[in-house]
Structure formats: C-alpha cells, structure tokens
Amino acid sequence: MNDATTHAPIPFGINLGFCTKRWVTPELWTAVVRERLGLDLVQFSLDLVDPMWPDAIVDRHASDIRRMAEAAGITIHSAFIGLAHYSFNQLLHPDPAVRNYAEYWLGRAYRFAALAGIPRVGGPLGAIPARLDGSEAEALDEADYGELITRLHRLGERAAAEGLAELYVEPTPLRREWPWNVDQARQMMSDTADSAVPWRLCVDWGHGTFAPLYGEDHGNMEPWFRGLGDVITAVHIQQTDFLLDRHWDFTVPGKVDPVEAAALMRRTGIAPKPVFLEVFYPFEEDSASILNALETSCARLKQALA
Image (cartoon, rainbow, N blue to C red; front, side, top):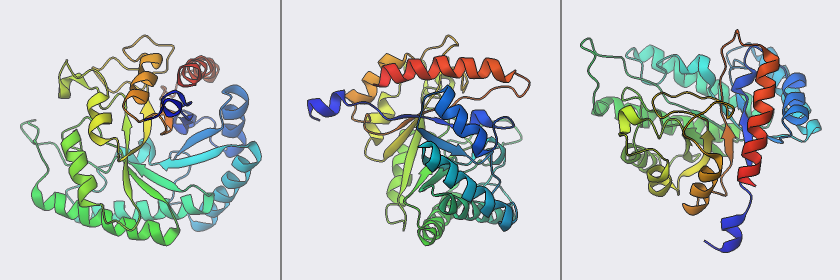
C-alpha cells in the first residue's frame, strides 16, 4: 500500500434507512442528503420501495429515483433490503415455499435496481428458526447450507440478466443467520466464487464487534478487515456499545471513534471502499431532531474520513 492510498479520502455516504416512513420520495430524500447532510453518495433502502408492488408502480418510482438522483448529483451505490424484509426469515425459512418466495423477492429487487440505475443489491440472507430449548446451533445444517449456495448461484444468474455488477451478503451477529463469523464468510465467498455476478461482503461495525457473540476482546473490526479484505467492498458504520446492534448516530456516546475507525480502515487496506452511516430511529421520534443529529454525525464522519 503506497502513501497516497494510505492518506486518500475514504468515500462516505449514508444508508437511506433513516428515511423510512419520513422522507420516502426522491424529491424528499435527495434534498435531505444534498442540502442538509452535504453528501453525494447513498445506499438505497428497500424500505422506501417494495419491489413487489405492481410493475407500473415500481417502474414509475424507479424512473423518478434515477432522474432525481442524477439531477441532484447523487450516486446510488447500492440498494439494501431494509428492515421490513429483514424481519422475515427469507432464504433460510423452514418452509421451502417461503424460501422460494424470498428468492423471487430478491429477483424483483434486482429488476427495480436495474431500472433505477442502481448497480448493486444486497443485505442479510435469512435466518433459521429458533430451537424450542433456546439453544443456538454453531453451524447451518449441511443440506440447508448447500441449498442456500444453490440459490445464491441462481440469484447471480438473475442479477446478470438484469445487468447488475455486484451482489452483497451482510454478515450479522446472530447464530441463526449466516454467515456470522469470518471463517463462515470466507467459506461462503469461496463457494460462490463462480457466480455469474460476484458476491461480496458489506460488513457492519456494530455486527462485527458484538461482544456477547465474539467476546470482550474482540472490540474492533480488524479481524474482519484483515481476514476478508479482498471480498469486502463496502462498510456500514454506526455508533454502538458492542453489547447490542444499536445503529445509533454519532451524537450518542459509544465505543466507535470515527478517527480510530478511519485509521483502522487505512491500516488494513479497506480505505478505498465506501463507508455508509447506517442509523435507525424510533418512528415516534421527531424528524427535526433526527436531521440535527444526522448533520452533526455526518460532519464528524466526513472530517474523520477525509
């Protein structure tokens, strides 16, 4: 890594999950992103557009998003599945018919993204059900994992047909989801290496530092960055306490220091990859206070990542 790369600015944007039920149209969120937050890079949230809407509605929204983002000078790096779809068990539901539907849903998401000019789509893949005794498995059942990999290859073919450039898996800190550690993520990337569209990782600062799962001595992202740096092409950053997946903004005290985070990304070679602030708020919280907190948080992160 040369000196210029080490000190190059880290691309910084924001995941639009904070817009859910608030700034839901491109007229609204482009103005918030550009005028209030001073950003030109976003990760779209599929909490704002349901790809299962009828084609005429999806197509109109996709066209509006493409047109208004271009007019505002905003690059939409990727689209992530959002909280609504994440709440389902998706590709790991015990009912095969539900898994089939989840695969179809993702295909619809790829179609929307292509129409909206969004080249990448991703998110967590799904969750197996909890056991009756509450115990957690260390690994997926071999047959379930094999079927998941088969589906990821089919999804790669669907994404290629839509003209997408990249698909994302987002590891989560739950044993019922997959992958949840560095070795599992590496295995999945190896098993999908021949996908028609490449599968890559978007790792999250609050997921990879979850102390109840990874231990108290695992309080930073270095093992993820060093172990998976060649397949990580985006990062979520949030303020958190390493005790739960908080998704706080940076007006809240926590254990993530933006300056130290930037230094770690540069030191491990992750720095050229884009970083997205991903925060969520209670629906009853007033919108004005959210905008103020986001302005402060984005200013702090921009300074640290510059």
